[in-house]
Structure formats: C-alpha cells, structure tokens
Length: 112
Image (tube, rainbow, N blue to C red; front, top):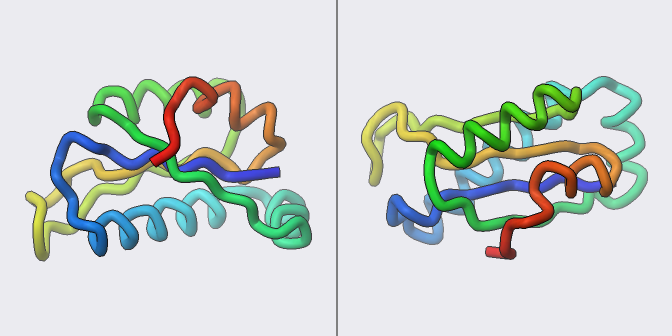
C-alpha cells in the first residue's frame, strides 16, 4: 500500500510551503479513506511518494481518474496567507490504496 502526493512545480512554492501542502494533502486523503484502508496503511509503514505535477489542470485530471477508480484522493487549495493567492490548487494526494491502484493514476509522473 502507498499514497502518492502530486505537488505542482509551476507555481514557485518555497520548500516550507511545499512541505506543508504535501502534509495537508496526505492527511486529507487519509481522512477520506475507510477505516480498513487506514488501518492497513498504518500497519504497513504509511509509504508515501511525492511526485511532480505540472499544472492545476493535470491535478484535476488525475483526481478524476482516482474518483472513477474509487481511490481515496484529495485536492488541496491554499488559504493564501503567505506565498500564494487564496484558492490556488497546490497538491493532490492519491491513496492510501494498493500500490498498483495508485500507480494506475500517478505511475507516469516523476519523483519530486
């Protein structure tokens, strides 16, 4: 099992902002998953990968694929308190789910 977090590379987030957005996405998708998935993922080390996303459009397209596949996912929009405009889409988390299910959505992306 794993979770993939896709963070946008086209909006110039600083490292701290990037880390915060990845954390928000991870937790949000985890909270949307059912308790059985949550337990399995926690018992198996909570594996995560962070991947490069090129645009807001790409994140929405990937979220739609996850939705159709019944895979837990969450899109994060920034509150706009620091570097970004309010509502800026920053990251997408896919999973936790079986590795092959997550890879069916994000397998073509590069590691961050």
